[in-house]
Image (cartoon, rainbow, N blue to C red; front, side, top):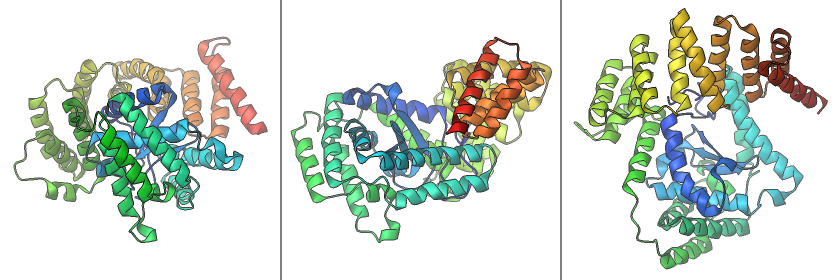
Length: 433
């Protein structure tokens, strides 16, 4: 469910958005671009940050950070694909690698700082999270990630080549450049980070326009399926990240299209008006009764409204319809754990073992897994799950403490014991620097 990993911190802080539907849409969008760039999709990680800024950047190696504000501003999927292609141009061009060790460490620290802020928020430390995020934001303001104009032009040309190889209409690339050219007219304090770190020039737009004019795909229409899922993603993000009162004011009276109903359902849920939200979701399900993500949304609304048995039923339906979605599986497990009944706890444990095996980076699921193991009477595995969560959150001292506790309680030579030993060794190496 959306917001499962989003931080409850101040609006200036950055939080990671984890949502099964949104991640599926981003994979759908990025796959052809990665293919055009000659990059394996598994070798580049995409992170979506809940922040109103218009921003995207590469940091810490092959990590691309996208801001929700950027997606809200870009109304065509080809525009977001253009941003991804441009950032892949920086990666393949080695623009960060050529900066020397100091700049590489700075970008690595920025990536780590954002992930630390995310982890601190998930761990329930909003003040620490806001402080970390503020520090990482100042790195952007100081231009640690600023590229030269030559690097920007190189990334543009590479990105346009990737789009052409993928058969994507490149006109969105020019549209994105025009958006950020408009940023340069703003006062310094109002310019979004992307405009600061990606210097614009008239030549860049002119060269891009020439490439677009020569492209055999310049008149290609947006695939209907891609436009549909991109629209759903934007509607969901708008519903969760805009003020609900504003969202409801902008909806046309009596609007019955899916995008409007998504915004309405989420905004009403956040007011809160759970009954109104559920009526909107039921209208969505009447249109698409086998849509796993609408059942998941219904489960989230029910669960966060305290209607746990009904939420479990909705989540079960979603899992049956999308059995490969580990985030939905983890949400069902969390709802089951809230009942704190032996049978529900046992089922939650089974679900969480599968969910965390498929998605090792889900700190929230690891927290739930520790609870499930503890209720099953296996304190050793509970300590191991906690150690793994602390590893994700970069709380290395706590990680080592819990890994040692796990090693003491688990059978010597067992898979859990061996994993605990690996974590202990990692902690010792980190302590030595």
